[in-house]
Image 1: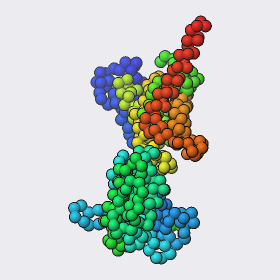
Image 2: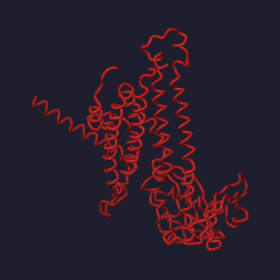
Image 3: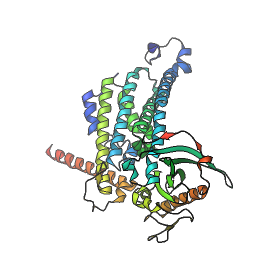
Image 4: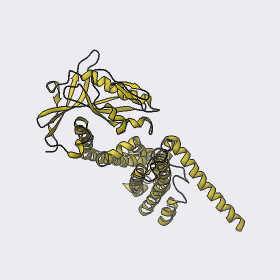
Length: 228
Length: 208
C-alpha cells in the first residue's frame, strides 16, 4: 500500500492515482484514529472536569454561609444539598443553581449561583444568604475576565467583605468613595462598571429569591455530605 | 531525501540561534497573552512543548506517506488532536490554571511554531532529528516566555510565580500585566537583542 502511494513510484493506472480515496486515505485514517483517541480521552476526563467545577463551588459554600473562619475550622455536621430552583416572574422564568446548607440539622443558609454581564465578560457569582433570605452572608466571584488591576478587584476579599451582613429589604446601591448608608457599596476606583455589574447581579438575585426560596420548591439533584 | 541539519544542530539552533520568538517571531499571540505571570507562561511552554514533540514525532513517522498538497491538513489534524488532549488534561488536573489560561490553550492549534517545525523539520527528517528539534525549540520558546514573564510579573505585581519578591511598598505598575505591558516588554527585549547582535557583528567586521 505504502509503496504504491508514494510520489516517486510510478502508478500503473491513472484511475487509482487520481481517485479521491488514493489521495486522501491518510487524512481519513488519521481522522478516524484521532477521533477514537479523543473520544476515549473525553470519556475518561469529562467527569473529572465536571467534578472540579462542582467542587470549586462546594468548597466555598461553608465560608459564604458561616463566615470566613469556618473554612479553617472545618465545621462538623455540615450538609450541602445542591439543587435547582425555578422562579416564575413576568417574562421568562429564571432558573438558579442553589445550595441549601444545613448545619447540625438546622438550616444555616443558602448559596445561590448567578451569572451576569460584567465589563469584560460574564461575571459568575456565588451569593450567600441567611435561611430566610433577609441578609447577605457573603459573596464570592467564581469567574470573571475584568481588567487586571482594576475591575478584577471585584474578586478581592477586601471589596467582597462589604457585602457581608447587608439586609436584602432594600436594593444595594454603588457610591464612589465613602459608603455611609447601610445599603451602600463602595465602587472600586477606576472600575465603576464592574462594581455596578456585581451589585446589580446581587440585587436581581435578591429580588428574584427573597421570600420565595424554600426547601420545598427546590429540586435537589443529590445529597452531598461534607466533613463527615 | 536530502540531508538536513543533524539532531544536535537542530537542538542547539532552537534555543538561541533560531529562537522561535526572538529570531523567527513566531507564536507571538501566546507570547504576548500569557506572559503576565511566570506560572501561566511556564504552563504554556510545557503545553506547547508536549504538542510540538508529539506532532513532530508523528509527522516524522508518516513523512513518506504525506501528499504534498494535503500535508497542511495532516499537520493541523495531528496538532489539533494533541492540543485537545492537553486542554482536557489541564481541565481535569490543573483546573485553576486551565481557567487562568482560558482560550489560549485551544489556540495552540494555530501556534505557527508547531506548524513551522512540522513543515521545516519533521516532514523532511528522521524521528530522532524531529524530536531533538522539538525539544530545542521548546527550550527556546520557554526561555523567551520566561524572560518576558519575569519582567512583567515583577514590575506589574512585585511578585514572581505568585511569591512576593519586591518590598510590599513597590507601587505595582499595573500596565505591565495589561496587554500594553506585553508589547512594551517584548519590543524592548527584541530591540536589545538585535542591538547586541549588531554591535557584535560590527566588531567582528572590523577584526576581519
